[in-house]
Image (cartoon, rainbow, N blue to C red; front, side, top):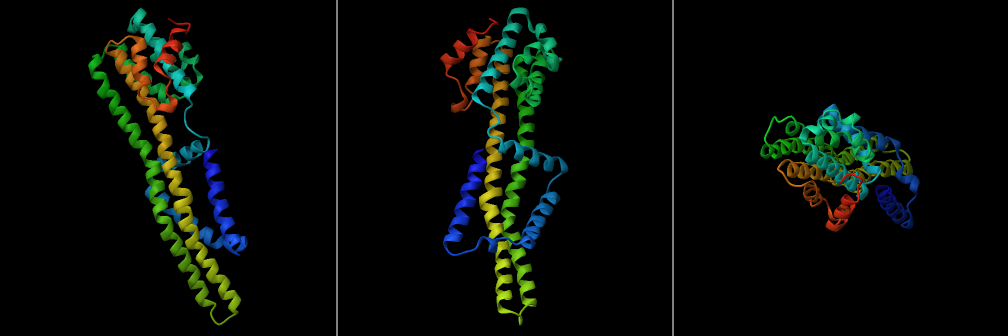
Length: 286
């Protein structure tokens, strides 16, 4: 929603200023320039990006239009489900966690928290962290570097879409100039004809430069930055999981492990220490 508001403001300001100055909106609408500019931008994106990254760009762009990836309640559910699982492991031994981490999709515990259970990437990351501890393949102090490697790979993959969009944004003013030059070539071929027609062709050519600069600084560049913030929200969610799991694996009590995870969260998403303690201690599983 916020993105739409931003687009309305920037387009409204641009169009209003143009029309107040005496311009006609129809003067900015030239399909040939749009097709030329859009084709160059899309072609460059296809050339520089693997198919996987192109799919990620579409997916994350749509997700960004919906707003932030998580609400405060989602992080609270995350802390609850981790605490409940940690309590189970503390009481009955790590082997009691096997049915949940080996088959997370069918876990009755995870299903109690839909926002977590439906987040397949986070669910898999959480279970991947606990599995080697549950089956005894590694020692607790070996878990953190293992989870750090997974986070590094995830962060690297998430960096690709905003990187590509940033490069496209940087190229758009140049593409706009190319579109304008092509328009001037057409205009030069019309010299000697109707003066008003020549003026119209020059105006059409200049809209290519306008659209290139406008899309660079008003749409594509800001969208790339928004995706970076979106990715930060998703990485914060995963870092919360890592901090809590590593703490629990190293012997901290469930409540303290959840507190360590809480401290990773951004201020606007983070419950206070007292809120967390009250929330967890009043749960059905104690």
